[in-house]
Image (cartoon, rainbow, N blue to C red; front, side):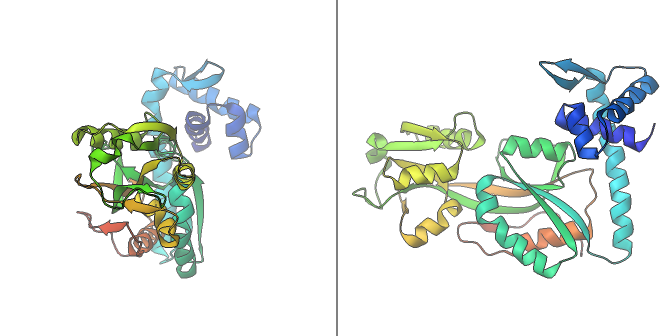
Length: 308
């Protein structure tokens, strides 16, 4: 059993295609297929099968996957630890974030980090929460910025940093007063997040808690699209307030204060439990923690990061 065979298998779990694995590894599909078959022959079980036009892991493959991922994690940890022994803050950090965090917050983190650590390469992937969690789980990413929903506690991940933001009702300047009772908003059109998304579940639970039934006229999976609809005066929305910092400055959006209790949520920087925390990643985390944003405030963690 060789590392290249294990790597082909772990990437198959991510891409579900021999061709995509071959492109990622810059090998021929035949070479990847040989890696997978050699692994199956050595273990004496089928590790994957075709399902609905894609390759999916079998039950045996699902059992084997975390162990093979751990092998690659240990190899990666060895490489990074050796680099750290040289007292170098260098290497590669693969980070993921949602579209709104990537466009509004991440550029400032990257700018500050690259000025301080120009020898560290940073790769960024943007996607929704479930895609980012899967990429982190599969080892395709080292860390992700994600919403920390209170009822979801991923057992395989460790938080490196934590922030808190209020979620509030935002509107365009209009005849709607900036302070009003929730009861008045029952006839106001709401633009909310896509049904079934994490944000929708959190907001829906909040509305149930305060016994409020919004008149929903539109849904979207994008905060940018929701803001555009609100600015067009098609309704009001529930948003992370940090998502609209720029609009609050220009006056194109404003916060509607109500008599309902406030809703707050947390953003978290996550890593896999089994992955090595390199000096570069420690430095990246500390830069992220040092940022001073409106409507997004750092919170202390129980564990302390080691010195970079």
